[in-house]
Length: 73
Image (cartoon, rainbow, N blue to C red; front, side):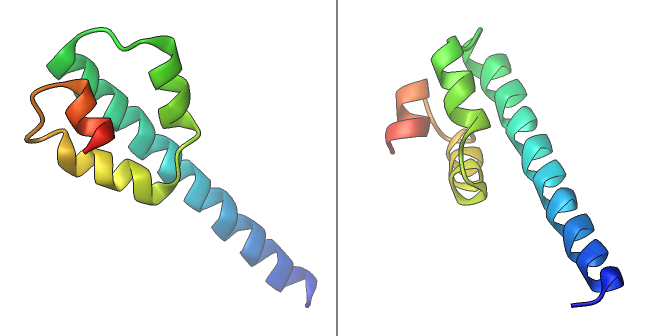
């Protein structure tokens, strides 16, 4: 792998991490606006979640009546 290819891979990985972090922050804002202040353990769970989990929870927040409905389905 050339140096340029390594740099491109590195840049792509960091870009993806930035996108996931932004999605997690948006989810936290939506949840807080809908359900009030979030407990610290939930904030940590969101920050450590996979992109697929964040996407799933983001979809659920639209219809959920409680935080449990968002995270437990």
